[in-house]
Amino acid sequence: MIFTLAETEPKTVYNLLIGLVAPRPIALVTSMNEEGRLNAAPYSAYNYLCTDPPIVGLGVTDKSGGKFVPKDTARNIRHSGEFVVNVVTEDLLQPMNICGIDFPAEDNELERAGLTTVASSVVKVPRIREAHAALECVEHSTLEIGRSRIILGRVVAMYVEDAFVDPAGPYIKSEELHAVGRMNGQGAYVKTRDAFVAVPRITYADWLKSQG
Image (cartoon, rainbow, N blue to C red; front, side):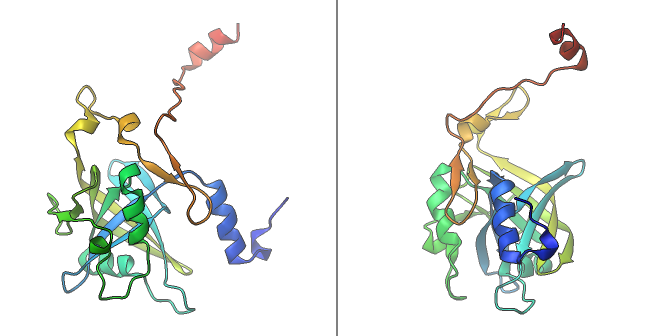
């Protein structure tokens, strides 16, 4: 099938994109509003974009309802200029899902999910204590496109539990961290436990040799 997106409903475009751009890492983002109230929300429109400087990108759609009203995460980041990306692993899958519930404004997602926080090392927004790794970010820029905001965050500090760091690199022991990825549709995820496949990169010279 061929889909001409100019003639395709936005909901259909969404369904197709999230099914093809997968698996995707999940950012469980903590942010803080003007009164110091914390918010935690999961986003899978997320990835790292460059390393020098270290930049991550976060796609945040507006609230539903037909008006251009930013979600709490986008509004908080614009106010404070800071946020924390907490890495979602298998043990955080269910708490992350709870944080995605549209709770009333007076409710605290972190408390509802049974999660706690601890002070970050650089930014004022705390990270989630139960997360095994987290990226502390400051807002680099925000681009508004249609009903979405693309937030670029400069990573200013990283927290990783010692057990998941190989000092030889240092490298992240990804095969032991067991991060979770998002697939198509709501509720569709993929685990990385026992799923790693090693495909070493080869040089042009090695490729020529393999061709005889």
